[in-house]
Image (cartoon, rainbow, N blue to C red; front, side, top):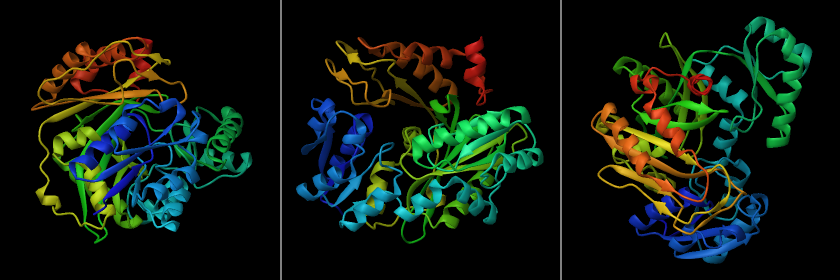
Length: 438
């Protein structure tokens, strides 16, 4: 097992990983930018090193500085968290080159899964259902031919990256040319790769993902599903487990498909297989996320398994000590992402408590929220025996949560969990668009 791990991230996920390491008796090294000099993750770690100025490109995305910090402090492994370098194949390979373990899948696996066109073809060959579509298209004429075959509406999607960038909904052939160039240019600017492919646009659908763990011995387990359909601009806002749409038969089929996906990729470590689920209960592969997901706590609550700790164990060569038949999913869990709507100081902070109420955050009273990074400032998670109880508990916890000084989306989340469609579980990826109209 490792004796020292560097956490190449910030905010709530850095705090989350530091706590996992402390529970395992592992020393930690935090890295921080000049904007995060007084951050709680830097204070909680055993050691901390400034890796650059505030802009992420000069600090949290500066691969050489992070590697230098690991070598200087004697860290044996680097945990990338999510975002930043967590799905960067070159960084994973750079860690290996310097004799540092990257806590996650190998650079080769990250590269394979990051190429969404290649991943689609891999899954199709493995017998995993994929959304009807086409492989890469390089010209407008080619896109027009494939669009006529696929049918409209369709989605143009970037081969690389994520976060909703390089995606365009095309309602008709008349809109294809403009959307083709817009999606390609956005993808090129965001990921350095303007390659795109197209898929049939399915609606209404739910976004359901399966949490997987796989070790170096070839053991694979599925820890159940997460419902992630409440999204805005392709960014998730609220997640829950189990999915209100799930049946035992559907869960079994989806788990089998996720197992096939992991085996086809020769996957090692934690990963998430994401699916679209239509109203006829047909599901289609979307992508594999090769990192710890933002929404991992809901799985931890219902499966009673610490995913961050198992990431570390697997990276250290420790095999899974449980099998699929040992997994018991208990109760219901909901996570609300708390996002800032601006930067500023937090003069007053009140965090809700009580049984099975968890708030993962890097906030503290008096802290400054910088404008350089992602808007996520915390995750409120609850667990209860039933979904109805979990909704009631979440609403109560949201009403108790106070973050003064910075505009945020707490009131929006209260409205969402109070919405009749959400409470009935009768919602899909169009929920926020409909909710905004209402």
